[in-house]
Amino acid sequence: MKGYLGIILHAHLPFVRHPEYPRFLEEDWLYEAISETYLPLLRMFGRLKADKVPFRLTMSISPTLSDMLADDLLQQRYVDHVNRLIELGEKEVERTASNGDFAPLASMYLGFYRQNLADFENLYRRNILSAFRAFEKEGYIEIITTAGTHAFLPLFQQYPEAVDAQIKSAIISHGRNFGAHPKGFWLPECGYYPDLEKLLKSSDISYFFTAAHGILLADKKPRYGVYAPMQLPNGLTAFGRDYPSSEAVWSNSDGYPGDYVYREFYRDIGYDLPMEYIRPYIHEPEVRVYTGYKYYAITSAGDDKRPYRHEVALRKTQEHAENFLYQRQNQVRKLEALMDKPPFIICPYDAELFGHWWFEGIDWLENLFRKIAESGDGLEMITPSDYLKRHADHQEGTPSFSSWGNKGYAEVWLDGKNDWIYRHVHKAIERMIELVDRYPDESGLKERVLNQASREVLLSMASDWPFIMKTGTTVPYAEKRIREHLHNFNFIYENLCRNTVNTEWLTRIEKKNNIFPDVDYRLFRKR
Picture 1 (tube, rainbow, N blue to C red):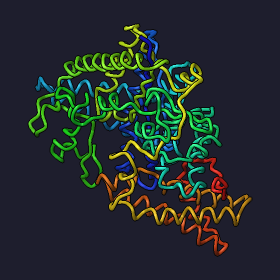
Picture 2 (picture 1 turned 120 degrees about the vertical axis):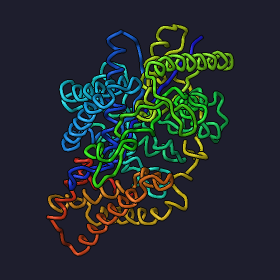
Picture 3 (picture 1 turned 90 degrees about the vertical axis):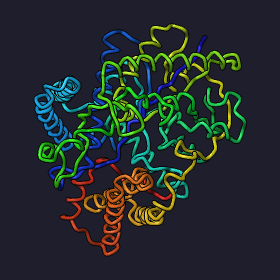
Picture 4 (picture 1 turned 135 degrees about the vertical axis):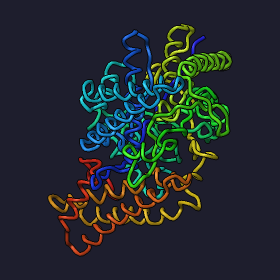
């Protein structure tokens, strides 16, 4: 048997940075991901390396996330965040000392946060991007990029200037943070439309990923389905998502994370304990939040929960890793009888699923990697770049308009709850293109103003805010962010129309929305 497995982890968070406040609720998204996903992932990589376990995977790290992980203010706030959780953990160890179910968990969490702080401060010197970069240089992972602010690109296809700005700003950011040009590109939400490949090709991208139906409903019937890449007419290569392996991990009803022995995400002492006890560790004025101290297993679909047993959950990750490997091996055996080349199973997941939403997910990944290495049965972990080096002949065609969102197209990012934003964002794009036409080669203060205008347009295009509006979580904040970036851009535009610059206001906004320090407003030049 011979087949390939491509694990793709897409690490992304929206750009959230509020220096105007001492603490800000939505900044916790970053701190939780650092604690529960990124640092544990790096520890897992380190264990596999130390044990000489061969592994190979692809990681897409978004420019917004990279810039936040490189920001001194946010790194200091992360340290403050973890110190609060360590203090809470010390109180929890004392509070649960007589509770045989909860005491071991309190000690485990306290040790977990202490380890995170030690790794972050002493091992990585507050620079975990450098750690991912080191694993790439050693050949364990391949780091690729995604659109600058993770815009859902199909909804901007009538503005190729804006789509190109998203692509080029991402490549510039990737070069700054990882010291290389990315070979691959994660299309946000796997959102593809025909002709997008032309812009990717012009930026020297070699491959991207699509939803399964993007390949299956291509203009030419794919001979190998999603189990081999599709070469587009301009030479770019598209890799299609494998549905069965995705559902095994993603599905709310049938996926591994829903097993009743795993930890329940939504039962947290931040909501369960009295306000007078938990107040120092939540947000003012008494806004309860998840602390990470969770003592219950999923148990059932109802509210009655059993205490969480970590050792039982770890044994279950072994079973689920074995099951996943068994299913993929069966897939390969069936496919190799139908193909004249080794099948390539593409398994893309949001990185933050592992460790954060699915607490045991990183243990599952580690068990999977170890079992693949032990099995020696011909299933090999590779990246798309590895595949393209080994195989030159591909099925040909152009994928169809598609995404991996609900129902497979654009409904998540364009429906009655969020469609109002696009006429405003599109107008800002038109005006940004106009500004580049009017001021094609500025320097000094005016260049600073125009660069900030381009940042605000890019930030207004982020897919995160319409997604939040659709799903109904933190909607006021999402709306506020869209309005804020549009207001900032329009303020700049109107000032430039009057040939004035408010330098005090500009400096304040540059310090707040400091993403893409090397952005060039000419990215929006008319095509």
